[in-house]
Length: 416
Image (cartoon, rainbow, N blue to C red; front, top):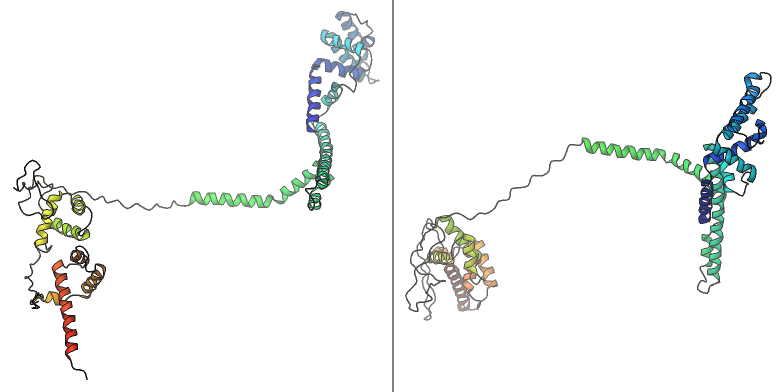
């Protein structure tokens, strides 16, 4: 339907475009005067322009409204001027001669309707278009209704649809006059008027929020804490480790098969300070024996060579990991059980008097590392803070001897 209407409009415009504006003006004058132009001027059809001009002057003096105060000759004078304007132009005169031969376009021609549309005002054209569109919309609605109804009838006849017939038929609604533009436009305006307060409130709220965001003081962003980068302590170069035993690293020449010891390696740092020694003790406890790449990790953290770290660790182990500025304790005299079942004297109170924290740490370490575990006492000493391997072993022997004595005394008591 829309395609047909579009084709009609295009055909009408193409047909109207075949006539120029001067030819259409001639058609309008012919229809308005309704008299032969040459007869009106009393000249022949082959008259020259000078003869037509002379005839026009004579009739204009006769039909001018100022010369006829008692009679209304304005219409006749206006027609005379229109006729003269057509005949004085060679092009328009030729178009008029064709009209005398072929006549005006009839209603079957598109230009017939176009001539009337040209004379209409904008309001009249809008009203006519509104009526045409309304009628076309109503017809299209009915055509759509019949199409849907036909489709449902075809579905009903098919064997695939049995129970869905009634439900599908309810979807098709007959078109009504309320579905046309004269009803839809006022309905749209009514809804717009009703929703206007709500729309204004929404706009007002949005504007208020925007103003509040603009006037609101900016929230200060939290300052990021400065990142502290741990840098390697600078040390003087050229320090040579003094000669001494190294319990984990031996230096041998690849070319010399003799048993002569290699010279000590050159240190990668300066002198060992108390802070360096304290850090070494912490790292030794943090990475106990058995850790893969233990001394390489400690040497990398401290920024020294593996040989230097192992050498100093060996010295610290001899002093039970005590710093030089710490007060040296008296050697502990321990009485241990020998194979002859004679006890060695345990004369130091540090073995007998342990705090609850140390005692609990020792018990948990004993349970974690049972008998038979590799490097058991080294691991137990790492778990007990501020206690060495020897102290842990002496404490364990002391507790075992105490329990054994209590058991023997209880067995020797006579029964009641």
